[in-house]
Image 1 (spheres, helix red, strand yellow):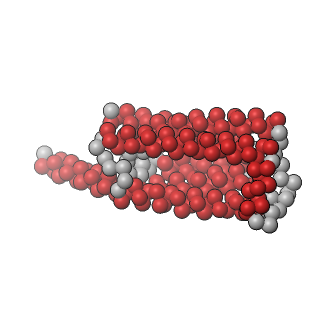
Image 2: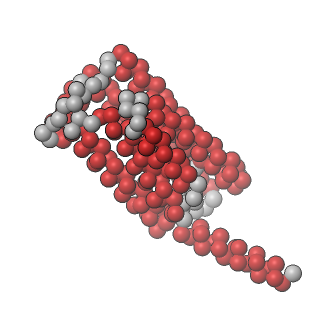
Image 3: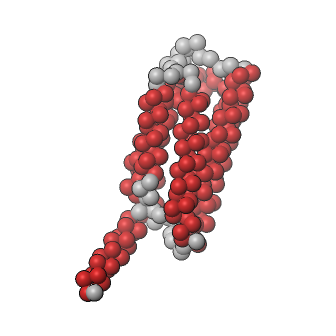
Length: 217
């Protein structure tokens, strides 16, 4: 009986240490909704591209400003940029709202050393990938943008997984893998985006909701 008590104490201490070093308030529901937003955005983008195809013609631009101006000046470019911004904004706002709600419900801090470490380790690969994708666009390598966004997003999730729910590591690995696969299917990036940012997010969010959110309710 005494040995069992010691084991329970050790498990309790380990759990407390893990919670103090990890941000545990990520919402599974926000992952599901982010996936839904991504699928809707992919469908809208597909409709835009089928009516007004966006092509680069291998063009190179002398500066990033020239690249952005040329992209936004294209009939499809401005529309796709707007769709992307709306999807990103909706996913981020939904994630923040649901995360804050979950943290308050379980009396956990939303902004502490663990959440700051999570944000920093997530942002570094993501920002690096964003800059690299701009360079690809600058040199007219539009076909590689979709694979690179998936790969760097996956790496960002893997890098951040040690500071939050470890399950996001598998979402990251899945995105890295399909990102690498999509390098062999240039021109089908939108479908891989829908798979990675849409379907995989819904699967991950559902798993997290059933595993963590429902159990705590």
